[in-house]
Length: 356
Image (tube, rainbow, N blue to C red):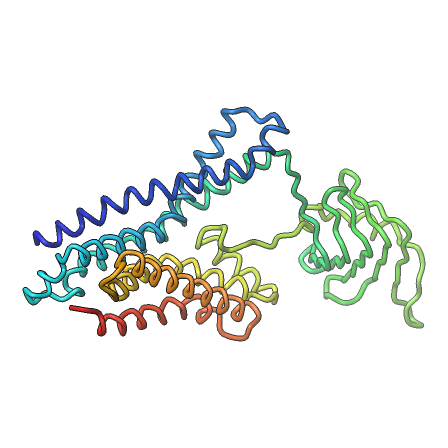
């Protein structure tokens, strides 16, 4: 028990210092990247401070894995350099049993990292982006291409080549009209359609209707024109980055994609990553324990170098598997979870060859 307390006391002292350092680095980096924009747009100092405050949770979230890695590697390397672990091994205690309390804590940190992101980081970071866009006078558009909107319970289907959200303008618009039995009632084509208060004003257009001899083209009648009231909000781009919303919102978004028959592999891969990525805290602890003390010279530098190299490899592997999942090469769950599972098994295997 005393050994565990001694180890954890050393760990958390280094961990807290690392968290403070890396968080401040991220905050100052964000400030320096936008400082000229704040000055040129005459942003109020109080607003800039508020933006940085809202960025603190995200900075802490980013800093957590690297801080845990540095604290674990530094602590164990220091123990090796001062021969404290040699005395421990001589007493019959292995490195795994000595660091077991830290491994347990890393699991709880991984769980906390997920809830920190889901309950706090996503919302504060979203607010930070809004305030930053306002301070920098950044305009966002919701332009959309190849947009399809179903209206009036399926009686009308809009198909537009492009939606200009700035001017509320539709280009190459097709509108399919159907009767109560969902049978063909008419087809409207308009080169442009501009939103006018409560309806769409058509540019050059043609209307096709069915008669006894087939289909005839003519002008659109008032009854069909009067029904063009679907608001512009329906045509705006609704694509969501699931990594920037809560797990519940991401799940609902995936459900809507599947219901609409739209591709969902990308969204599913991001959804699984929301759960798997926090496990990186446990992975870095396992890697630091397994790779520390591989040499008697320059223990700290060698251990940190090996750990950082392994973590970089982890991120590269995760990037590759996520891309494969998004393109449908592998299942989304594989893309999100495989790097974590692979490195956990790799770390456990390396522990067998760690000096004890």
